[in-house]
Length: 190
Length: 195
Length: 196
Image (tube, rainbow over all chains, first blue to last red; front, side, top):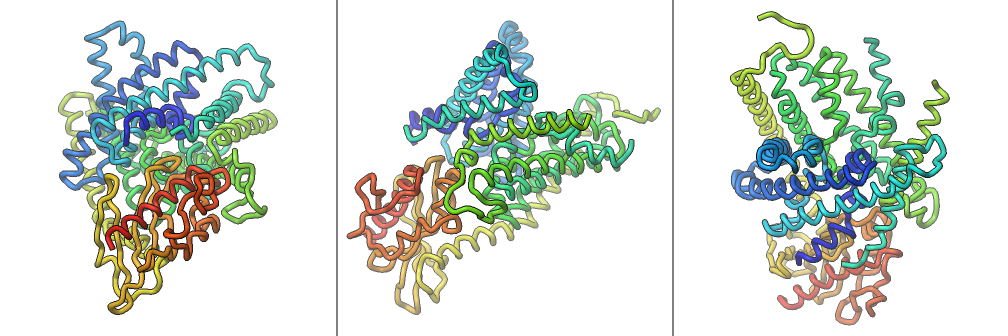
């Protein structure tokens, strides 16, 4: 598959949050402010790309070679948890300013199903190394795009007069639905 | 603790979906029909009960600092067991649920219960807790799945009661978000009346 | 050691941590290995049953075992699998496992049954991730859409949706899925005729 198709499809047509429903928890949880959602997107981009790269290597050179594909879920999640820890330690040492910006989001990423989801999807789609990495980067951009647009909408929503039972999460879901509808307009461009 | 209360809290009061907003990815992803919702819910319930049971069993032998990694290994093992068993005996349901079965491992509800409840309580309460929360989760998935299937396909449990198509948007992704939003409003209202 | 009631009573020394993790991972992998051994055969059987039922749906009744005579032809960077069905010695039809990457949400796998002259006997969807309620109408149990392929010979009947100048009525609101399905069928037909 051509890279450009992978990229466009992952960001717009099959957006990981709005059409594949992965990473909903941070999408609803950390999208109240644009700044925090930019931080979260950065952290996800970082971890998702490295995690997909590493899990690809593990799948190809370890699990497939040894014929223990059934250990996939367990190894992938351990790798992701370990990577998150590692990234946290390295960032703290190497770039304290970046750590300050992304640090609080890192522990949340272990249970962000978008990261494990993208790693598993790359394997399912039989992507090669390069395709997997491009796929991961594109999906993390898609995640960031959805998150940041949504945060912008929610900042405005705070000023709106919302009926009481709708306040907070319920209205956020309705708005997410409208955003998903807007993204459906991209269908068919690839 | 009163075991009946412990069991029923998951349905409304501490419902993981409608009240705590946890584990939402599969909630939106698989609920295109009532039966998919129930299948996903029961698979999650199994993992919840078993991991709560094992975590509670070994809580005294695991040092605090490696608590979370140990829980993750335990949860991932039960998820893989569900994955393999479904592939062998319920292949069509496994295909319908797809990626969301391995993703049970990152469902915050499961790790959340292990950490917040099972690591502090005895084995029996932990099993009841897992069962209650799991069935509450299943109930939420079933409810959302039914609403989307009735409105979107004009059928329930694959039994069609209208000719032709339903309101297709409810089967598509925007409908998932919107239907869940309205269901939460409904639960908010009910909780208010109850209180 | 003094026993406390709640929380862990093991101290977080390095030795304790390593032992705890080792024991847990060992027990986990051992039990997974066990479950894998138990489910290995049923999983293989379930996959085979699915393939065989698709084969017998798309070609007329056969007396051989088409799975034993499988042959492969590489197409577009992937492989088509051919399963010839025979009645005695006579070839009565070939089931072809074909694919397309043009689906709305990814790959679609289809089993196409061709009679010896290339006429489509029947089609069956093996795998897809199309939108429920829309693209999934390509499944026979969801709608009769795929019946229109039966008995058509692609030599005189153009396997493409009417929008593209073909003779197939697309599924309502799912032109992309229908187009992809036609692509898969077309691929099987071409490969079959070229290698006859």
